[in-house]
Image (cartoon, rainbow, N blue to C red):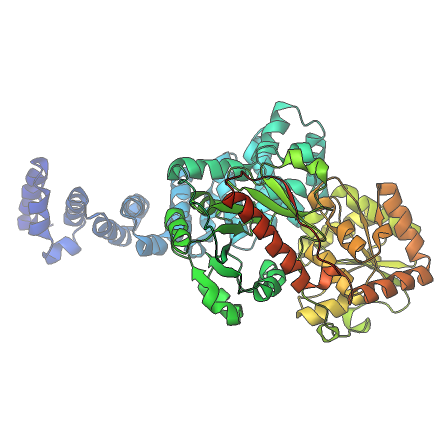
Length: 632
């Protein structure tokens, strides 16, 4: 270094010692030598950091790493730490690959950098960072697994959780997360371990796991009304949100006369199952006596594609926090706020809790009680929630007379014929259709299906499962249970709904899942005319298929026990005439059953709203309500 620069450097150090960092920056910022002499660059970077210009300091250290390869690692670490402190997303994305490649990267820094990138949806810039996390530490393993899932690598996520649990076998959150992952992968070994754990539900560890499992995930394996109403991870999160956002406001009084204003709350207005089944209800509402609002907090772009003539009813809540969204709802003067989500993915139940609407109800999205959201009513029907269900609900039940499930009217043009060959199915075999999502599968249910397959060598199982890893696991498990893998055929890529219904119609017999039945899927099966074998359970989610079959005049297809389920399936597989009899009954029911009469179902729903409103106008608290059926 030149003598004059050495003198300048000494002067700069004296200024820094005196705390005059702004003067140092002013002295060096425009000096060309401060961009190429490492000592001066380091001095400028240090003073920039002291004056709060963290990202600028980090960029200087980053350049120093390139100028001094032998000291590159410490300079890059300094740069990374400054970028993290500054929240400099673009800089973090640029330096992340070099940080991830460091041989001795400390897992804590890798975690901090990965979190920062994930928060900015930039983690694809350095996926190798995930490999630098410490799999033995639960927080890092949990983060890594969830990030891998978000990056479309579910198998790697599952393996990460297994490794972490090997180090931390008593970790509750890792156990819960592995179960969710194992179900999506059809990992029978992991699912059976979970079943064994929950077979002794009163052990402290099992109780903790149960409490931290998502409410919906519990329904996939549990048919116990007493336990289903116990606190879940969703309820705990909702109560935390409530604590942070304050007390719910005092409810407004309902209007004494005039139209009843109904507000439906969801993020699923658009191309979603709930919108598909509810759209006929929105359109069939009696606008002379009811005003309708659709309060959506999902993507407006998605909603706009499907709303059509409902566009005028839509109120966009996207971008609003819970309190502001609740205030927007209240500004519309809603009398009855109806949440369509419950404890399902993406739900923002705190919006409903914070609303001052005179009455609040939960409907359709989640088939059980929803504690903590301040709902007055759960809208159900008498079949899925008999009187024995009342003690298990925090809400009062408002039971519709025939069905709680809306459906479109039957239109023969809505089913497009499909040939077996087009679906990859053999012409001469009996086709058993399994059309529910794999997440509803349990090891015990698969055992029942394999028992049916062993007893009916003429049958082929046609399953919905599009995850390759899950397919391999299902085939391996079938072979283990004595059923050749070639007897299982997987349903192909998603098809337009008329084609999908045509595919269902190819099944000689459909096998329902238990304890969590098909809901809209079962309705589709009956619409397609395929006989459906199910069980009648103890809870809403385990009674839906039976209720739908009863409305279609075929409730004898619902078994009371597992043994009856297997026996009934084998009986129908072996009797083509009996299958034809039920198909004929189902095809006739499509034209007469209340299941496919959305206008009638809407009138019943409107009667429910009137009954709720009448009690409120009389100053009476919510009470269990049974809606009378209209004459047929």
